[in-house]
Length: 128
Image (cartoon, rainbow, N blue to C red):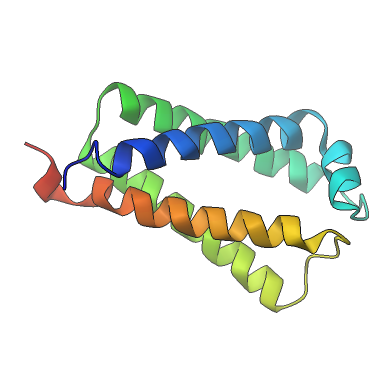
């Protein structure tokens, strides 16, 4: 297996999914709440999460796709994994109040799939 087999497509999914989520959360967090049918309480947190997605996931993925590096691969893998873990814990604790909870559950599955796909980008044996 090489970086192009799994890591590159996973990094592209990370970039585009994070761009979509990040832009919506950053620019129009109320729309996100409307789609999930969730209460729009303190959308400042959603806007902040959107900014983090745009800065870390989108820019980081784009930079890695331009010039793959072990350190950046590790940052992207760890970020995706922490996001998946955080969303899972929030689901288990019942912290999400959305009526369309399946959308949150689908996001968690996507985050785990991306993390798995990115894992090869964090292993030194794939870099020369």
